[in-house]
Structures are given as structure tokens and as C-alpha cells.
Amino acid sequence: MSNTEIVRSYLQQFFSGRVRHSQVRELLTDDFTFRDPLMSADSADDYVDQLKQLGDELELHAKTRSIVGQGDVVAALVEFQGPAGPMTYSMWFTVQDGKFVRIESIYDPRPFLGQAG
Image 1 (cartoon, rainbow, N blue to C red):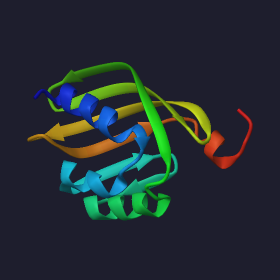
Image 2: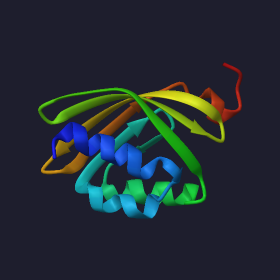
Image 3: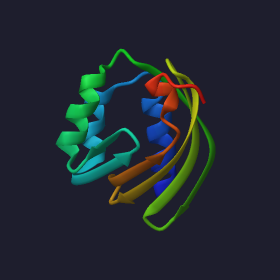
Image 4: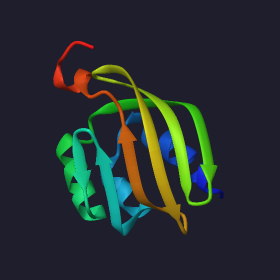
């Protein structure tokens, strides 16, 4: 499976209804890092612990608008539909040996913070 297919599968599997944060750990390297406007993690366990605080009852749906990959890096433009309404993310994935080493997401967090756009 190519790195682009791994990312596409991840987005379809984990963002097609109720999220399953507790199941994402198997997809991450131990030294995994995550960055986005509201959260950061410097290990897979730290990331999963933070996600679990959000709860698995959160329902999200992802529509991948564009996805491109070159080597270990895959970029995806994704529209998420969730409790805060539709939000567009630019996501950058680093994939090695079939696992995520790094995910960086860029988006406008104001809907999560209850602020007008």
C-alpha cells in the first residue's frame, strides 16, 4: 500500500462516524509527533491520551478534497463535518514503514473556540 493510500484509508476509517481514538495507537510510531493550532504531542502515547480526553462519542466525517504524496510526505486537503460545523484542514503526514511519524494540521480553530469567522 502506498503512503497516499495509507493516509486515505486512515481518513476513511477514523472519520466516517464516531471516532475511535483508542484504536489509532497501532498506526503511530513511538516517537510520533503531532501539531495543530490547538494541540501538540511529542509521543504516540501523549497524542492518544489527549485524544481520549475528547471521547470516542465525537462524530466526525471527512471528505478528502485533494491528496498528493511524494516519498514519505503526503498532503491532504480535507473537509471535516462535525459538531462545530464544516471545517477545512490542510494536513501533512509523514509516513515511514506504514506508520505515521508526524501529522501537522493547519486550520482556522475559531469554530471550536465559539468565535465568529
